[in-house]
Image (cartoon, rainbow, N blue to C red; front, side, top):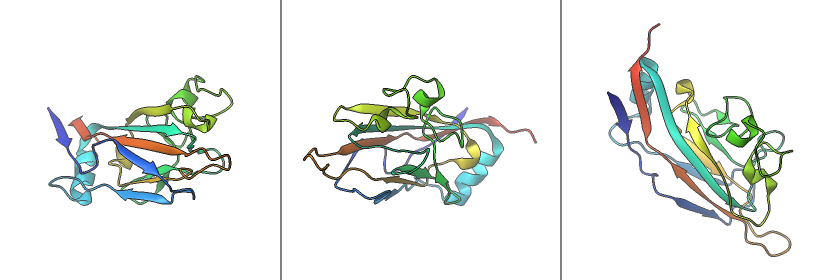
Length: 165
């Protein structure tokens, strides 16, 4: 079976008007379980995953050198990678496969242009799950008047299998 834990932030949410790095902050509140109970769940499960998506319009991550957005682990650690990428890679899924909109960047959003782009995928490092908080920046008004913004979507925590120590 699969244990599925819901939270209060499952709907697509706009981020707009937060220009500084990580200025937008949203804590995730899980239904019917504390973070310590969720830590026990991720400890005993062999697999856990959580879908994460950011749709961006002139808004970027820049995990590699100057982070503007990130997610936070239950241990309050700044996580500088996105769904579909390896932990500590400082990349998004497209950066793992060298298929980003700008091949010199690690995420589609890092192209940082006035085109809607997306970075998404599954977070699967159960030691860093569930997502405790989301932080974004670079969603102010650009010097040329372009209104930078983004939308995030965070899926339910799903855990399955029994971990064998």
